[in-house]
Amino acid sequence: MSASDVFITGVGQSEIGIKLTRHPLLLTVDAVREALDEAGLTIGQIDGVSTYPGRAAGYLGFSPVGADELVDALGIRATWYAGGMEITSQLGAVVAAAGAIRLRQARHVICYRTVYEAAAIARPDEYPVPRRDIVDGSSQWFAPFNALSAVNWTAQYAMRHVKRYGLTREQLAQIALTDRANAALNPRALFREPLTMDQYLSARMISSPLCLYDCDRFTDASTVLIVSAGDAVDEVTCTPIRIAAMAGSVERLSWDQAEWMACYPTGTDLWKRTDYKPADVDTAQLYDGFSFQAVAWLESLGFCGVGEGGRFIEGGKRIALDGELPLNTFGGQIGAGRLHGFGFAHEAVVQLRGKGGARQIKGDPRVAVCASGGGPLATALLLARD
Amino acid sequence: MRCADCAVFVHPPRPICPKCLSENVAPQTVAGTGVIDTFTVNHQKWHPALEVPFVIARVAIDGAPGVYLTTNIVGCPVEEVEIGDRVSVKFLQQGEIYLPLFEKMS
Image (cartoon, rainbow over all chains, first blue to last red; front, side, top):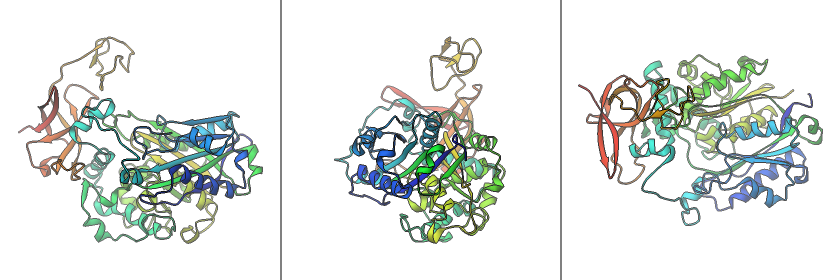
């Protein structure tokens, strides 16, 4: 390993729940503690913090804990920190940290994503959402037409696959079925009961072709990844996982002006930045806030051709825990909860370290790919255990 | 909007052309017709007053390459909407705002 390489060292996660009462800052600290313990680091060795998207004042459930609050709460002596929504989706916070580390701005950076959307909706007095009669900004192009949720926007991408490439409901179902089968083996997952094809096909439609089980649901949780410099990994006690390549992109953020999804150019770019090939990947952890995004990521990353994603996952064997490309082995967001991007990188590290317990994939996995976003924003990371 | 120097359409409106960086951009009348690029049928009642199902579509505006509007397709059953359908605008007044909805052309 070279000093210019950047690694993910400790990873941690709070409990994952619905309508939790534990303060979201404390959920974040729970995840930080677990990550520090795994890495054998102390808070005094942390000198950077990176998050997506920072404290969201108008929508606290989406992001209740700002980086400055975490710095303050834990007494971190930070020489670099960042948090913002204008980045190439959630794992862009890891890319930013890796860049800062390579530029010698920090050595051990806590990257985190904390969500509190279920609790916030249940307790509107504590977590109010401002209401307005007139919308502006990008919402003005969607809200008046009751295109009120990202599901409406993502569904339109999925519908093109249905009409152009023949994506079927039975094929798409394999994302949710795989997620729920894997979640049953993950003690922290939100949904521990497997899902059947009959249940999937009889579920109510939300925004065609996406039904209830194609959508994640609001969750309360925090996920932490510690990103460390190559010349600092001798300070950690866990197996460091090297960030072998990173890629990201932003399409036109208004969603409806984008010609196509941002995951496609991002996937292509990722392979230009490494000697690894898609065939080297032992497991894929791909964003599935809506199931179709995982299908698009499989195509984007070259595991199959554009338009072939439906046939690639048909029957589910190929992406199952014992298949040739185990997908979202922790349950994805549909099974484990809406951890919002960071859960995929967390699980990639867990699997590469062989710490997956009942859901650990077979063999000796050495290379994993993880991705967040996919629509107008996309980030992909290739991780390797040397 | 449209750039008067290089004729590229600019949407959503911005005070600069993204192709030639000219600031000579101004509102431009467009056809009022277009083609359904993609769509979804929304079944979820996002608020109690919302009547479902209804069609949300992305319409490519005729004669304005690269300009799309997210809109609703009205005036026909939801199951009769397809990608590629030709549509024309039907404005819905809401206070001082006119919303461009679309209906299928016969």
